[in-house]
Image (cartoon, rainbow, N blue to C red; front, side, top):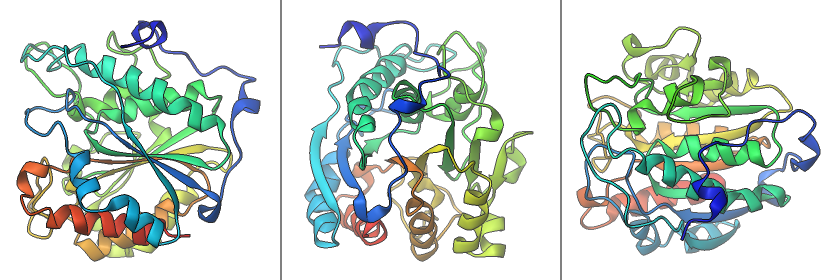
Length: 312
């Protein structure tokens, strides 16, 4: 059951002077990964992938993390009500379901953000969860937040009454604009770095970005270095990793597959270089589709990638 706080209509804004509540930056060797499933795709366009976190568990994600030397615990799933609406009414599909899910996520992970070294690792989620994790980070006392948004798309579509869109496709727009859908804290476009888009024509003015072409030109490690160099030293960072940044031929188990994207080696190198930054406070791995991975071989490959690159 949702608490009164989770049902509240207004998010807690970033408050100056709350920095003392924020835990210091932590090196990978000192982290404890709190693995948490998000068993609902209220923010996605199509149903059918509501229990994708199970595939990671079936593939032995926790054992792989621990075998790689990580401190990691399986914290189960976010408790999300099963009575959320499902509809195709513009502008945002299933609204207010995504908003309720964000509050559930925020309430669940915020206590860990007060614990030195605890890093929530969200699995089985859609891209819109970044709104809930940003809310949690602000409530924990972060006065400066930055999102590293690794995705095959920019997810910056503006909600429109003329068509129905998923909350996932509007995630970056919702993060960076005032709207009736979420009261904040809203980030400036300069507080989000989009990494990996295969369609630069969708780029947003003012949004920092490194496209697929940039990564190929620079190399994954150098692209990550440049992305991190633009992040303020005092920032608390969310690493959002959507697996549709991978080429569909390389990884045909993305919720929204792309015909061009990174191969597994490139994605592994990029994720590793970004995730080792001590400013990382939350990691979310989104848009894996278990329905497209019957034998769970892709879940195993993804779990191995995470374990290898999160190893201290």
